Image (cartoon, rainbow, N blue to C red):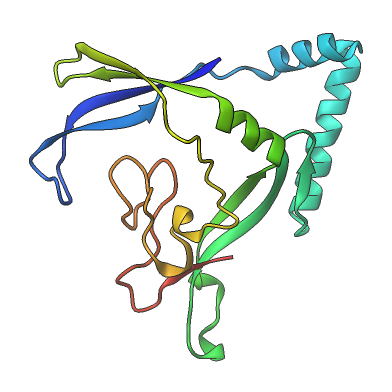
Length: 194
C-alpha cells in the first residue's frame, strides 16, 4: 500500500512567494468509508455477527465521549489515545481570567507506536500537475518516514503562542490550515495550547 499525494502548481497569493507559481503538496482525498462498511469488515475479521459488532461499536463510542468530556485521555484500541483540549489567550492578572479567553476547543489524537510505525513504513507516491492540470511527473518517496508527534513537538500545532511550521497549505498564520494553525504570534495576549 502507498499513500497518494498530489503536487499542484499554484499561484501563491500571500507570503514570501507571493506572485510566484509553486508546487504545493496535499494528500489525495480518499472516499470516506461509512460506518456500516467498517462494522461489516470488523465483524468479518473478528468472527462475530454484525449486530454484536454494531452494539460494541456504539457502546465504545459512548464510553469514549463520556470519559473524554470528563477530562480523561481515552485509549482507542489499536490506534492510540484521544483527549479534549483548548486554545486560549493568556493574561497577566488573575482578575482577567474569563471564558472569553478560550478561542477554540480541540480534539487531540495521539497515535500509538504501532500506528506510527505503520505510517513510517508506508510509501508515498506523488503525482505532479502543472498549472493547466496536466500530469508532469510521478515520484515515489525516499524520505526518512518521520512521523510528527503533536504531543512532543508544539511547533507542529502552533503551540504556546508561536506560529506553526506546518499550518496548512498556505503557511502558519493565525487562521491555521488543514494541518494545524498558528498561535497568536503578534498578539499582545498570545494563544497557549492546553
